[in-house]
Length: 348
Image (cartoon, rainbow, N blue to C red; front, side):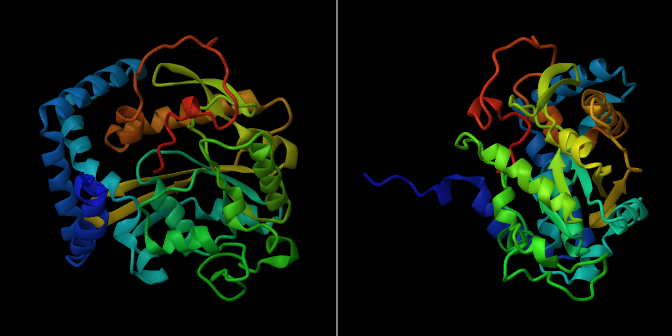
């Protein structure tokens, strides 16, 4: 008996290969409205609705927030399909059209940091339209490498950058662009993006290689993008608390900042009405050796502040974790890349 093809049993091919291309043809505002309506339909499932209510209640108590749960529930439901769309609503646009969909603030912090030639650590997370933020960086021709798990189901433009950045076929080689300096330089050609991707299972030493490549990229004046909300036991992790959950969080970014002197710029992106995005780059942080733990705590507090302000954007943090609440901080440590360490990093 032949098994049913996965393409017929999974929602992803239908959503990414059929629904989203059709919705893009409606234009940004109508596409966004349709995604909001689809999200509300998805959230109406009894089991999912109860889960949303439970997670919002737990998070509200953990943050001491004064949320209207009915309003939060409705807004979060509308964002379910928007969040699942990742950066795909920007596919097929030229650079200027894509960039015009963003209301960006704090861009001067990034431009200044890169102009100083020390590189920059762009500290992202899984809050809001996080892959749209990466899309913005790529479209703006920011000289960049990204040390993260390679996300699937992204726009053709972002997928092409993942494949080609830093290679001989890099489409962002020297030339004018809407962002700061784009020339690869002699060292940048030796740092192809595929060598920066993390995997759930990596041979011993592979994680260290990626950190060393990131250090080389920073010293070459590039920006390096990392996520700060990945709860994952490894030699580069440090303890922290997010929404009441104690865990070890990936902190290679803090070690790189302390080692290289590169400034850390937290970057957040949220969904806005009409298919737009609101992107914020915080003022830079400077770390010295010994500051890493305080920096991890500072970032998690920044993330909690964002969640408290816009809980509907916290789909990953509210709905992905298996549980919300205190956990023992002395649980056994796992090796870099172990499957058990995957928690908030569901980029697939």
